[in-house]
Length: 226
Image 1 (cartoon, helix red, strand yellow):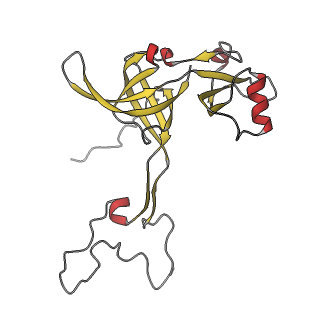
Image 2 (tube, helix red, strand yellow):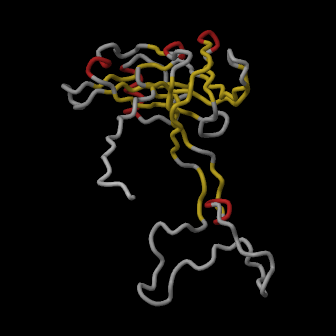
Image 3 (tube, rainbow, N blue to C red):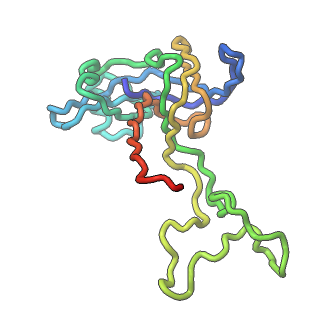
């Protein structure tokens, strides 16, 4: 299985077999119901499985959404996520199956995706790490945390795109790669993942298996300086 839906509960710590201190994130992996199976040779045109997790009353669901849950004989769920699969993997699942945290193996590497914490409107020092102006020298007043000049008065006479300026900080899709699964407690629906994962406590995250990176070809140098 390529991925599973989880909920971040918080962080704690443990010691590995070598006695090293390891901070870990506690993730609750509730039952993931297979809501829909899409195949490449069907009307969808690609292989994917749609998982649903988290209890909800379903009062805010639309009629088409309620129809999908009814067809799968699954009660309404809060979170629905689609995972792409290969031809061999898609054949292992059918509508109505249930997946939990036991699919994760201790010691495996995973990628975790989630929405980072929102920081609101932030200035350039907090948002981009600017140094700021000198402390009250040469007649400078109330300018210590400003961004400084952002453009020019002559040609082209505008502010370039992607200029680092104050603005909304956080609340973005973030992926943290190559995190190690430190423990799996299937009876309690808990998984321990090394390090931190994006989002606040109680936030929904998606756990994917880490794909091996393709090796880059190193081109030989044309010559060496003497």
